[in-house]
Image: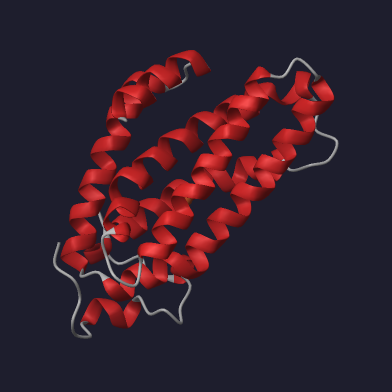
Length: 192
Ligand SMILES: [Fe+2]
Ligand SMILES: [Fe+2]
């Protein structure tokens, strides 16, 4: 995919010195993978505020966790198979691409452990740690990674990656939400 060589109008509004979360939401950027990711982080961030509370009870919060885990897996898989793939093939973005993959794998592992534990206290502890680590991951993406992507990849490339992100997300959503973990695994295996 074509890489950015000169400063263009879009990079002036998407500078590395400007966190992605503060980027201008103008019409030219609709469909840009950066905007799509920022939008999909919003519901996750809301659910994290509930799940990271120390007194979280399993009986009361299991539906919130299920909703969070479903949205998280869909977002993470779409991000990995579109933006992270491109980043890993782009000098200057490779490290962040692998870092993202690794953090997603750790979160996915935690989701599996949470679903498997019969112990309510272990459930609460792991959900809290998951919520905190995903919050950190999202903040890193919004404050650093996406700004670097904006600086490195042309707007047209980001639109193409955005199209792929939307396609993969749609494929997952059409069969996934809301599904139990067993069904989720079948879909994920199909995409791997
Ligand atoms: Fe991510
Ligand atoms: Fe993300």
